[in-house]
Image (cartoon, rainbow over all chains, first blue to last red):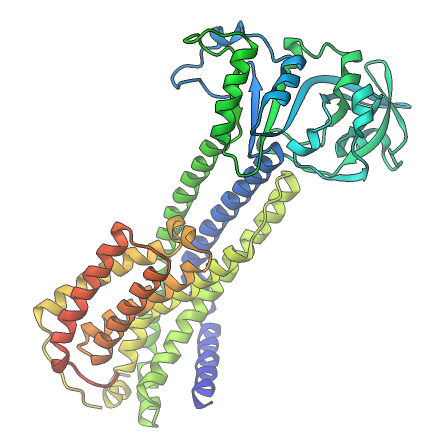
Length: 416
Length: 117
C-alpha cells in the first residue's frame, strides 16, 4: 500500500515536472513519437498486406492445383519460355471429366472459362464485368460467402439453366437499391435470372475478388461463348483430398493428364500445374523485407529518441539537485528519488508513444478512405508500441534516476 | 549519506562496457520481426528481460550486489523462456553461454560488492 502511494506520488510529481517544461517535453519526446509511428505504421501495413494475401490465397484455394496452358512462373526456373507455351492446347471439358473420374487424390474438380461482358438491367449497365462459366463443384474449390440468394443446384448446372450469381459491385452498379434476387439481367444478348449475390470482398492481392464477377453454369456459358477457346483462358481446378499432400495430387494429375494427351515417355508436358503458393511465397518474402527495413529505420529512431530522453533526464536531475537534497534530508529514501525520475522518464516516453500510435491511427483512417485494402491497427501492434515506449522510458531514464538517487543530501542542497 | 567507494576491477569494467553495447543492440531488437515471429507476446517478455539486464549492468558498474544478483536471475529467466519456446538457435545459445560466463565472473567478485541501492 505504501509502495503504491509512493508510486502515485512519483507519477504525479513527474506529471508536474513535465507540465512545467512543456516545450522541452514536446521536443524531447519527438524522437520516440517518430520511432513508434514508423515502426507501428510499417508493421500495420505489412500485417494487413500479409493477412490480405492469406485470405486471397484461402479464397483462391490454398490446396488447389490449376491445370492450365500457361504457367504462372517459368517452368524449371530461368526464362519464361512463352514461345513454347504458346503452342500448347488449352484444357478441354472432356479432360476435366476424365480427371474427375480417374483421380483418387482429388476431392473436387472444376472446369472454368472466363470472359468479359456488359451486364444490362433496365436502363443501367456495367461494362467489362468478368463472366465466369463453371461447373457444379465450384463452391467446394473456392471459398466465398453469399450476401443474398443461393448457390446453383446440380440440376441447374447439368441442364445449363440461365441463372447467375453476381458480385457485390455488379449488384450495386445495376440494381442500386433494388433486391437483385429473381430479377433478370441481360448478358451477351441472353436473359439471365439472378439467384445469388456474392458478399463484398474488396480488393484482392491475387486479383481474384468476386465483386466484379458474374458466375454462370458452364453448360449455359457454352451457349453464349466458346468455352474451349484460347480467348476465354479455360482451366481445370483440382482440390486435393484431406490428408493428401498437394505434391501427391500433382504427381497423380501429371500422370493422368499425360495419358489423356498421349504424351510419350521423355516428352515434355504440354500443360502447366499451377499453385497459389508459387505467387504468395515471393509476395510474403517481399513484405518480410519491407517489415525489416521499416523496423531498422524505426528502431534507430527510437534509439536516438532514447538518448534524447536520457539527456533531458540528466538536465532535469541537475536542475532539481537541491530539491533532491531537501527531499533526502527530510527522509525520502533513495529508491523513492529513483522511482520519481524513472516515472518521469516512463511517462515522457509513454506520452511520445501514444502520440505516435494516434498518428498511426489517423494514417490508417486516411489510408482506408482512399484505398480499399482494410488496413487494421491491431491490438498486438498497439501493445507492442506501448511496451516499447515504456521499456525505452525505463532504459533511458534509469541512469539519470540512479545518479539522482545516489546524491549526497548535504552536497545536493549546497549545489545551488 | 556517505557511501563506500570501491575501486571497480578492470574485468568488471570491460564486462560493463560490453554489456552496455550489447544492451543497445538488444533494445533495437525488441521490435525485430524475428522476435515478433516467436510469439505475439514475446516482444513484451523479451523487452522486460532486456530492461532488467540493462538495469543489472548499471548496478554491476557501480559494484552493487543487487546488480550481480539481478543479472544472474535475468539470465536464468531468459534461459527458461528460451527452453519453453524451444528456441535453441545459434544466437540464443551463444547469448546463454556468454550470460552464464558473465554471471560466474560477477559472482566471483560478489564479496567485493556493496549492499544497498
